[in-house]
Amino acid sequence: MSNKLQLAFELTSHSFTITEIRDHEVTILNHTSFSSSSEREMKQAIQLALSVIPLTEKFEEFTLSWVSKQCVVVPTPIFKASSSYAIYSACFSKEAITNDLDYNVISEGNCVTVFEIPLWLKSFFILHYPRIIIQHAMSHTLRSVLEKVNTTEIHLAIYSNFFHLVLVKGNQLLIANTYDFTNEDDLLYYISFCIQQNELSFDKGFIHIHLSEESDNELVNAFYTKWKMISNFKSYSFHNTPYSLTKQQLTCV
Image: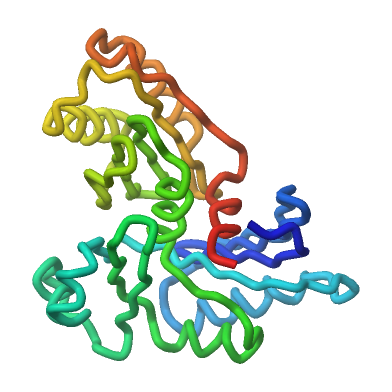
């Protein structure tokens, strides 16, 4: 991990967040919600948000976390035996544009994240910050988890209407997936289903909640309340570290 002055971006189809990381301390410089998902509107909103960055600061590292539902994690041998397009097409009904596909190698878990990212978006940020490292948010979560985990852990990265879920036991990755949700009951359903399917109901473990600027705090609090009423999962304790999603970007520099 780096202690240098870092400029970190988080970009979804709904919003754009600019943060500064200095000695692991995070400061939000700007958060902007998009009025539409058109390329023109997003570019204008991003450009306006970037204008608030203090020019007096000498940033040494630049990272971008691209957040989307359309990502899939596969073992490295499967990735090597196939192609990004074939893997993506097999997992999603939406046809991908080949130039918009990218991937991140996760050496810590011997796996690869395949995802769609608009080509214009990469070109836009590389033009402004030639040294920027652009990776998928799922990749950041996987790296931060797999480099140090030795227990049973569930990680939820919550956004406006979907969340990434990573389940690990020891140093073994069991699940890395994305789910839509509309309320706290959806969170309860998917998490409990994943735990039960992997026969981990009575394991002593940890649930890490990673909140984004899009997260609905009332919904998350309702989830906490209902979860604590489920007797089978009382052996799991909650962890919530402020700005954890942003700090995960420290793993890629």
